[in-house]
Amino acid sequence: MKVLVGYATVHGSTAEVAQRIGNVLTQRGHNVTVADVKTLTHVDEYEGFVLGSAIEAGTWLPEFKAFLKAFDTQLGDKPIYLWVNCIRVLEEYGMSHVMDFYMVPDLLKKLNVRSRTAFAGKLDLQAVDWDERWSLAARYDGHAWPSNFDGDFRDWDKIDDWATAAANDLQAVVVKS
Ligand SMILES: Cc1cc2nc3c(=O)[nH]c(=O)nc-3n(C[C@H](O)[C@H](O)[C@H](O)COP(=O)(O)O)c2cc1C
Image: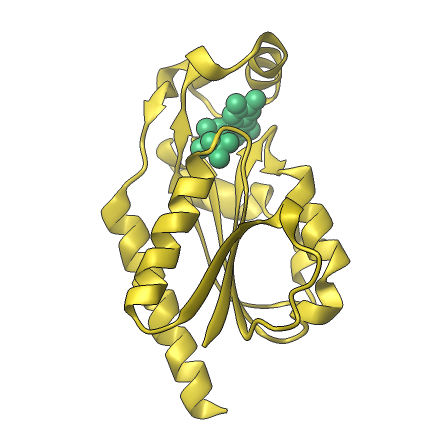
């Protein structure tokens, strides 16, 4: 199946996750394009989508929202698998918090999202400028200080497992239709 792995990133760690997911899907026989959503001008050639955004200030990046708005007709009822990269998921009840508060239901309600998840991301405070630090300190909605999560928390096995499940589900969708 022709699949787009589209991502939105500020500091690059979500792009690396996208690349990893793309590799898993390719190994499973899909014809995969990995791309920053900012670069996309049309998506009608894809039959399935694996889409992911970094989280800043408790929500998806603006270009991720813009992508879903701009292409909602082309996405139609095609299968979508959605992930976010963040640090809140590392806290107690983090996954349910992310699902309840970091998703944007208005943008998802018309789409055929077959699976959604959150991965622990990477925060490198050395690479974060003062405006971003201010935003992180003021807007992070966890219980711990965000500076407690300065590091790379990506769990590549978890990412591989989720990508494998998405690859298998995509195959099943094709067989059914
Ligand atoms: C300015 C800033 C704000 C952030 N806000 C949040 C937040 O509200 N909730 C959260 O869980 N993670 C937050 N994070 C953590 C990022 O989601 C995490 O570091 C992610 O892996 C970054 O992805 P990227 O490298 O692709 O940009 C924030 C990070 C930065 C730099």
